[in-house]
Length: 144
Length: 144
DNA sequence: ACAAATTAAATTGTATACAATATAATCTTA
DNA sequence: TAAGATTATATTGTATACAATTTAATTTGT
Image 1 (spheres, rainbow over the protein chains, first blue to last red):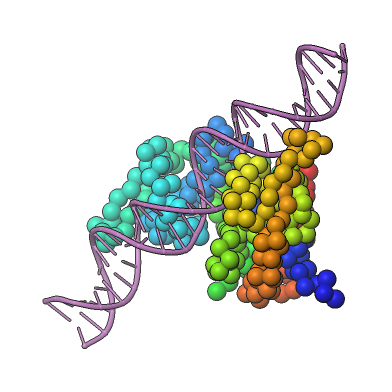
Image 2 (cartoon, helix red, strand yellow; image 1 turned 180 degrees about the vertical axis):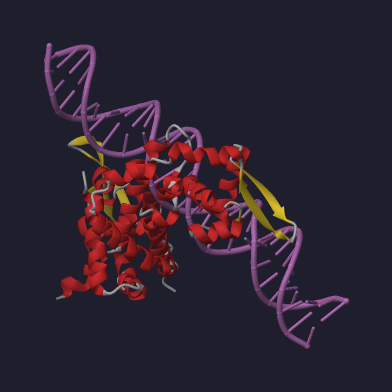
């Protein structure tokens, strides 16, 4: 009986651990495909958000990617230095910084267009399982 | 037709993104409960592995937690400085470093024994859904 | 209108992650 | 058995993450 006192503290009984480990594993599956472009996974997320909706404020990027300004501010600064995007203050609200892709930023999309398919091909889940996983993750993510 | 060229590059069409974001969200749900003990989520994982199986070599810890020595070596060094564990070379193979919990390391378990239940209670998934998610994550994790 | 509250970014400090490399010990094999 | 390959950690360098705080701009309440 007393044996069960710490059962929930076993790695195998926790949901958070495979979630954390699987996320890192899948992220790392992208890395080799980014080699030639030189971008990272997090930068790739920022580009995906901007390819769809540039321009975006830093705040909107934070909300979309579930990241905070402490993470995105330096990342955006680096991408600006590298010429992928530009930052501008919103004239209507000087607190807001608006991020827009440059031509170089847009053209990067061509180089990674086939990456999702390549990585998806390595994913050891059926289409049905992937769909279920997707649904459960968003349920987790959008709660509260 | 041409519209679909970049469809897979949309955040909403990717499995990796909600995986990455949900993992960070769930991890952050633990943080408030670690406040009083001063440990972090990654340190908590190391403790969970050791509470179950101390002593463990660094290599075994890396394998169990899916982390590399670049992450664990400094983390273990810090926990040793703080008195939670000790490191010793294996006399039979001087390459191997064996990590053992101290009394202080073991006693920490009492302080966090109720954390999994508390966090689990905030999880917006049914028992059935959690089970499905768990299974799919391990399928991802253990592939190859 | 104007002080207080709120908001958007940026900054600071700490803690991961991991690729790549280095180092030392052990194993392999010709 | 001795050189070469392999293995276990450690180190270096770069890039996140995020809590907490700061700064500047805007909004709110009276």
